Amino acid sequence: MLTPVSKQSLSDAVFAQLRDRIVGGDLAPGSKLPAERLLCEALGVNRGAVREALRRLEQARLVSVRHGGTSVVLDYRAAGGLDLLADLIVTPAGEPDLRVLRSIVEMRSALAPDVARLAALRADAVVRTRLADSLAGLRTAADDLPRLQELVTEFWSHLVDGSGNVAYRLAYNSLRASYDPCRALFTQVLAAEIADVAAYAAIVTAVENRDAAAAESCARALVRRGEDALQLAISKAAPRARASRKESPQ
Image 1 (cartoon, rainbow, N blue to C red):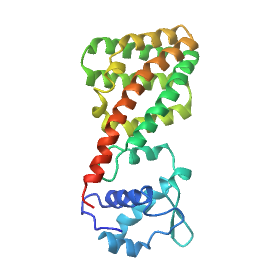
Image 2: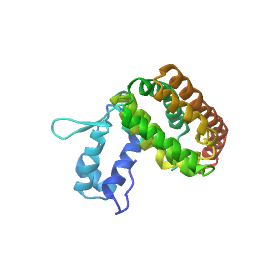
Image 3: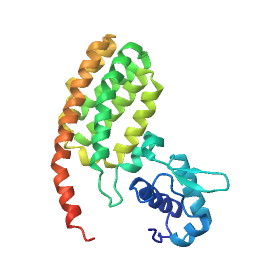
Image 4: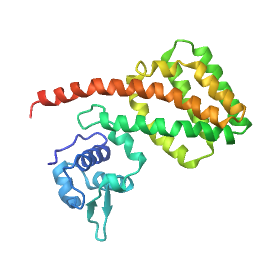
């Protein structure tokens, strides 16, 4: 089940291989990982790399280290947190996991309207100024989609700050960490949302006016455009992904 890893970033490679085995179901919840010595032999690495990888697996709540050093596999669906998204979005084959991506898109659409609503109620003068500055940047960037995408990310970060909700901030951080590595893949897909400067202006106006209902409505309409585009792209990509898996040598 395990294969030797390269000598570069040993602990990262060990962590990634064990994580993929756990998430992929090869290592079932409740099963025990081999002892450190056996893992070292199977993976061709030193004990320090294995221990560091096991520590990270425990932090990610993928394993539980019991008394005596035995590592027991946990069900990541029951024990894992949002920080695991960044590790799940890319499959072991190096391709985006469409199911995980869809989940991120749906969560984003669910949270964004309430983030805007709370920002309208709670944002202080500092956040309102930052939102206005981000809007000015969006207007200046014109048709530069990659730059607009960066500014939009900054805009939503300020809006999350304005919401005053710590849980939303942590969720946003996890979603961003998952999305950022493959952001460029979706620049064109999200073009209609990214370039809708008027929609961002409407949100800023609603926040400035303390109009929670308007902020929520504007944000919902904006992210819905992106969600519809992403869902369409995912539905088109799914058949190709299945065909690719069927054609791959066993």
